[in-house]
Length: 188
View (tube, helix red, strand yellow):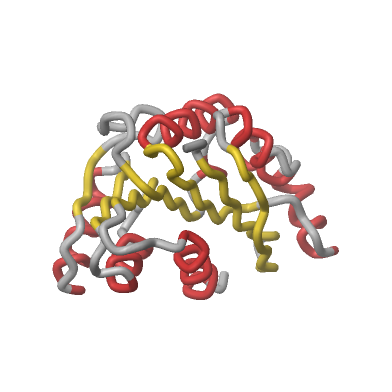
């Protein structure tokens, strides 16, 4: 999947600065969360995930890596943070697990927790751009969760949630289909 490559690209794209508060939405076992902190040690990094068992693994990985990150239990569509909490929200391979309605709720929540001028940076499955990706996407279109991604409607959903400067910034071809990097900004 070229995971290390696209996650590092996502972090570079986010242009995290010292003192930024960064949320890894759907952090799973905290691979991206830890990498953000290692790359930007002067930032405050928080991971959020809905699975307590996965978070236990994430805490052990963070301890082994020797990084000071916060790992919180919560759902993308109902985050336990006040408005304007974060400067950046990053998310890797999470949105394709959500139904259309849940994606919409999650994007509105991201907008709510970002401060003015804050940015959302996402890597997830996108519209296919190769023959192989188009072939694989035919199979995936039957699943509601990933259909929005494959149809290329994530940028529209970002706009509908209130984001400006929405763009697909890069693509990676994988055996599972096209991975796209997206960004959007909360108006300042």
